[in-house]
Image 1 (cartoon, rainbow, N blue to C red):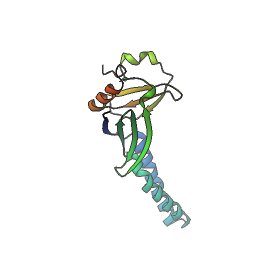
Image 2 (cartoon, rainbow, N blue to C red):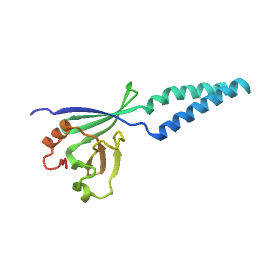
Image 3 (tube, one colour):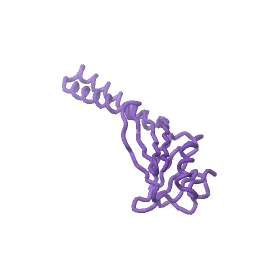
Image 4 (spheres, one colour):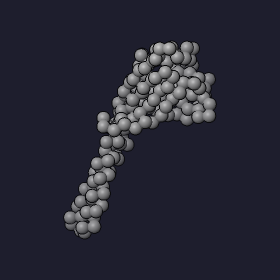
Length: 164
């Protein structure tokens, strides 16, 4: 049997909440440094702790999603600041009911009872596909799939992949 493999990396658009979190971290660090120098050296401990938090949390705001399709499974991972990688999910295609664009009429019969898991860039002009998975863990995965991965999925699941 022929192995099918395709891989795709999608950079996530920075979210407004991320900018607010960064700003709050920086402000808290500067306030702790000011109070540590002017008021009490105890605040220098808070400054050091906040500095470490800044160092470890700032890379988490720059995220890329990696989709890797291999013979019936889509592995989704998050890559933080192009340095560290964290496996997020594995989508097995055994219980997949439908793969279609989010705006497709093919998804109308599945309702809204699914837990939505979003692994997209957040860009409005990108085409987002929904993967409806039934069974014990019914979920609706949102992914930005390219033509090569769609073709592999269509080969694996004929009649369940729609491109509308």
